Length: 255
Picture 1 (tube, rainbow, N blue to C red):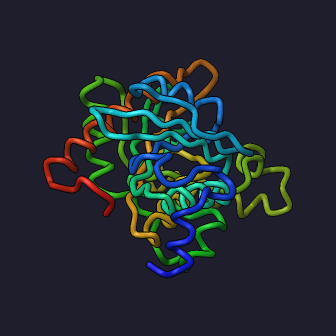
Picture 2 (picture 1 turned 60 degrees about the vertical axis):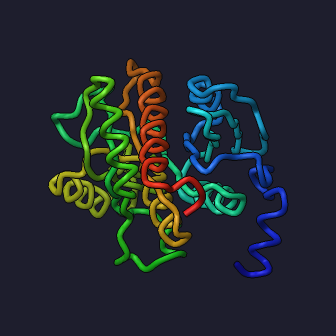
Picture 3 (picture 1 turned 90 degrees about the vertical axis):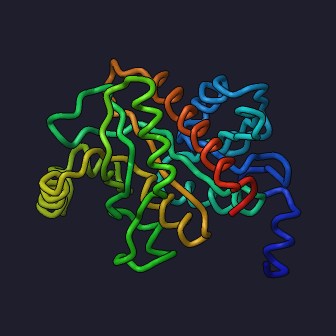
């Protein structure tokens, strides 16, 4: 570890306002700060650690192991900041817990999507790696989230997400100056079998890869009537299974 990295690991991080010992190695990452206490309610003895800008952090435990929840805000730039600063103080496993748009006809509102990778239709990750570098989730994270879905008996799908930067360019592409390009690309993602669309998974996976950390995601295919309760419970169950897997493999500390 470089001198600058060692110094960073000893200090409270600028954006998330958390320091060493404040977070566990496992961190669940919703976008919405308001969803942090909802997820934290599934942990044991969770308490608020910090609240600054879009970043709210709670830490509790599962089976005696510290687990944290930190909001990232919307999009790749703020997600990358969260991952960088959480990794600097000891976190090594990041799971995006979010909502997403539907892209395939077989997916119903309220279904869950376990993300194996993401289309890099965004800009943040290009500041870390060339576009040819894939945004891929960690296989152990994927397996544990899939097992959690099976155990809870929820409808779910496993596959690719589409990560974008501009919400309204997807929602109303026809009014954009590059409408033809936007709609043609969207048709290509759908034809290629991409399951859902959101704004964070690609940056999360690429930044985590560069830092040598694990990442994955579970998304709720959402419209107005879908509840986030099952999403949160299933994500926490996935972390519980990952803790057990790491323990059995002797991976008790940071990777």
